Amino acid sequence: MASWNSIYFEVAYNVLGWIAFFSWSFSFYPQVILNYRRKSVVGLNFDFLVLNMTKHSSYLIYNAAMYFSPEIQRQYHEKFGDEMIPVALNDVCFSIHAVALTAFTLFQVIIYDRGTQKVSKVGSAITAIVWTAALVCVIVAWPNHSWLWLISVFNTIQVVMTTIKYIPQAVMNFSRKSTVGWSIGNILLDLVGGVLNFGQMGVQSIDQNSLVNFYGNIGKTLLSLEVVFFDLFFIVQHYVLYPERRDGGKAVTAAEQAEPFLGPSDKPESAQV
Image (cartoon, rainbow, N blue to C red; front, side, top):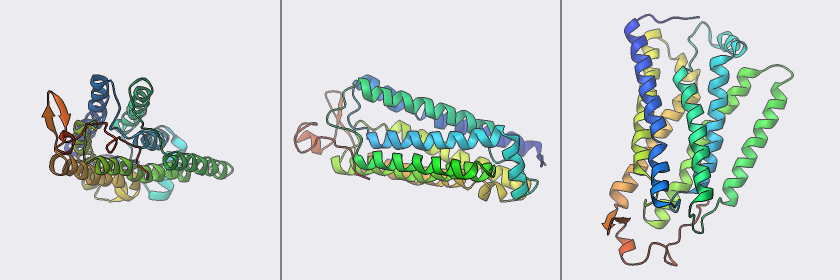
C-alpha cells in the first residue's frame, strides 16, 4: 500500500479533512436550532430531509465499508493499483454524524408545527425506487462477492441524491420568494466543508503525483463540486433574490410585509421534484 511522501502533506491532509468534518457536521445545527427556537419547521422542505437521509445513509455505507473492510480494500488495489485508500476516518465520522442529525431533524418535523407541508409523492417515490434498486444490486453482487462494485453503487446513489435533494428546497424558496425557515448558517458551513473536502483530495493527489484518488472515489469528488454549486445558489437566493427584513423581531420578506406569512397565497407546500 502506498504511503505518504511528505509529512507536511500528510499533516495538511488530516488538518483539512478534520476541519471539513467539523464544518460539515456543524452545518446541521443551525437548522436544528432554528427549528427549536421557532417551534416550527414551516419553510424547511420535507422532501429535502427524506432525500438527504437516503443520501447520507448511502454515503455511510460506502465510507464505512471502504475504510474498514480488508476485502474491499483488496479489490480496490486490484483495480487501481498500489494506491492509498481514498476514504479517511473523518469521512466515516462525518457520515455517522450526518445520519444521526438528519434523523433528529426528521424527529423535529414530527413534534413541531409543520403547517400544511408534507413529503410529496414524488419524493416518496424517488426514495422507494432508490432503495429497491439498491436491494437488487445487493442480490446481484452477493454470489460473486463484487463488494467494490456494490459500494460504488451506493457512492453513485449519494452523488445522485445530493443533486436531487437540493431541488425541492430551491423550488420552494422560489415559490415562496423567501428563505425564511431555511437556515443560511447551514449553507455557509456546508460550503466551507465542500471546499476543504476538495482541497484534502488535492493535497493527497499532489503528494502521490496521481489523480487516482479523484477518479477512484468519483463520488467524493462530485460531492464536493455539487455542494459548492448548490450552496452558492442558495446564498444568492438568500442574500440577493429574497433578502429578509425584520418586523418586530420576526424574519419576513418584502412580499410578506404586504400579506400574512401563512396567507392563502403563500402557504408553504412541499415542492415537487
